Length: 255
Ligand SMILES: [Zn+2]
Image (tube, rainbow, N blue to C red; front, side, top):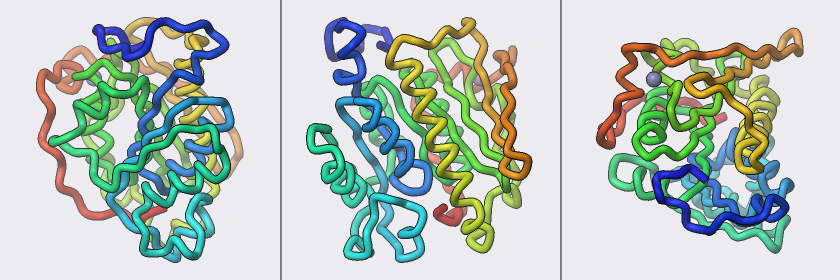
């Protein structure tokens, strides 16, 4: 599906495309839970969830796969178990580890699409670079205050660095005090990310080469808009030739 000779299943009829699809979710929290629900509901056959963190009691109201007995358990394992309970026919894999320079390339190449469900700003740029390197589509998602954003990074760009030259300032990232009201925004963005992946996996995506669509959702006015994003001519992210170093960054509040 992403070309480059890395397809691991033969061309399959349209109806069973989703059944044969493999999606990697990097993060099994605020974005990863709703995104994985929507992907499973649509009939995607396999979901891999990667998250090194443990379920905290504050996650329970907003991250639907985690239940009170899961507090302290690895989030990827807890989410995969929740998905298996709700979707017995779904194939899942839990990776209780970070997706970083040591494993990112192999993990991307083993999937048809990747969902960026992380809450670390610099990590999002790392994942974008790996998507460019491998040619595996990535769906970026983020919530900044009461604004949500989602964009698919398709092979040929644009990438996340075409959109933002540098990670947004630290004060744009929600604090724990804000996280409660942001919970519904995060759920909304996770659902949109799943739709953008499904559009691609089902073969319905009709993009213009070298262009992407940034979806912006305003949680105050309850409106959405779409912005066309073009490749930035001098973008370093579009010229990645090796797995970049994994960024060290301050831990954001888990939404
Ligand atoms: Zn770029």
